[in-house]
Image: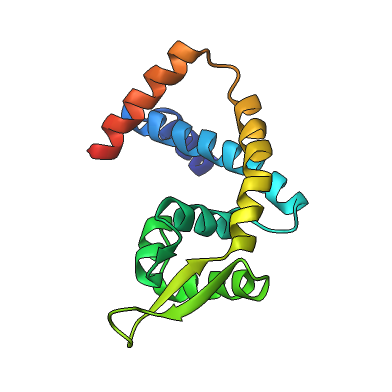
Amino acid sequence: MIVIKDMQGELSDQPLHTEVFFMLVETTAKLVEVSEKYWQAQGTNGARIRILVELMKEGGTLLPSVLARKIGVTKANISLLLIPLEQDGYIRRQAHPEDGRKTVIILTDEGHSLLLRHLPANREAIAHSMQALNDQELHQLLSLLAILKKA
């Protein structure tokens, strides 16, 4: 029992930067959950949508290794995430135009349509969750997050 009390005291007496880090993690998890619930209702998940969004942002074509780095997964995990997207017709694999040993991932018209159809409602669900902040506070938060991202 004493050990648990000691640990609780240790956890509650964290430096400010540690408190901020954990608050950021918890808040991010809450917002991701909102997004994930939306995507699950559409029969997919956020990781797969993130792949489609990254492809769209990059003009529709990326190497799997670049895609993995952009979404923060391993090369093995990106392969697993690509399989259902390819089966559903949202992406296709094609030989690299300059290096036939490589494969590129291409966003299909179906994948593009899925994003155009559902991203606005998904973004609205997220915006609803963030309405506790006004525009000035959102701009301030965005500036602060940009500073942390560069650190």
